[in-house]
Image (tube, rainbow, N blue to C red):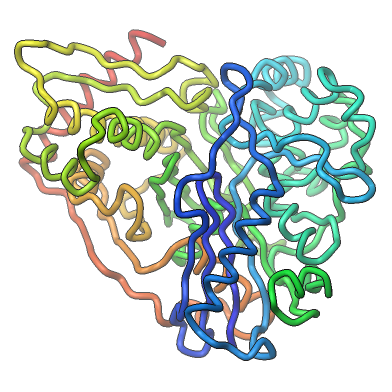
Length: 491
């Protein structure tokens, strides 16, 4: 039996076809070949057209079909992973009312900060486990305050994955995990937060019906099946935000385990069995995919917006170099980049900085000492140091992270990046042959009841283990300490 997984990113749509009997990915695709654009109508804003995501899902599905010929009757389910915290507004005809306000859009920071003060720190951190911050609920309130005509036409609000599921099934639905990532969920009451909705004056009817993370979420409609050239009736059996799904794809399901990614943004996501929160709400707690009433499981997430986007910005500025050459040239420079420091906070408000939008900066640049190799290394070090700063916050919540798992993708393709990460974080890194789309396909197989949690990970291979090296580790920890002192002096 085969299962399809889609990963709805802000840069591209990835698709995978999984043979659940062997656990092997038999086909994979990405669309478009170049990064999808973000619209930035104002400083700190970031929007995308949800219909563009759907168009790329269709294209990626076609690319899968070109690689293998599979009898549509053997496709047992579809799983969806998606960029978290976005807001899609649709009317009663399921038509999109405005561009999606996506994860790195910071326009609603002040809305969430005001709500945090009004609702009270104790309620927000004890019940929501987060400040309302810049999450989906606050973005929706921003629409209500600034675009009342559009707000009045909203029938349902959706997360990006909910939107794609709606295009597949015709049903507007969401999950508890999704509601928690939008900061709509009261962990103590185990229900939607009526107190938050009342404060924001949001009618609960705007929220979609809840379906389980794993299980029947709807069936592929005849119209969608025709568009995708699949068979009608294929069930959608799994959906999750990209970071909980990344953890699933790496078999990170138990307390103390952690997963990391380093794409456009960088994330460390650790599983906890407690309803824990950071007192400054710089990292966030959401319902994990392995959560159950009998065994509560939450995911504690730190995010650095300026990760791969910082490295790609530098590549575009240089213009005459590819990523492999960038890594090789950066490795010629000693740890610490001869005192050059990069602070990669140039992609919207950074949660780990208290939702400040500081902008990126380069410090201690010396025209007489520093060259291209120093800048190339300093960018990679600055990204890792930003991630490590978030991990320090997580440690303050009682989470001890000494081993992390990652897919062999994005910045983890760089040997230098892997080295800096392991040595700075004092953590063993395990790399696997998986990605978000494969994780979504494995989730679909679990949700369809075709495999259990253990069987779902057969076929997944550990490709590499990177352990801290004591001499380098001392050098990186010294460089990080100086970077951290500089950061704190500016906050």
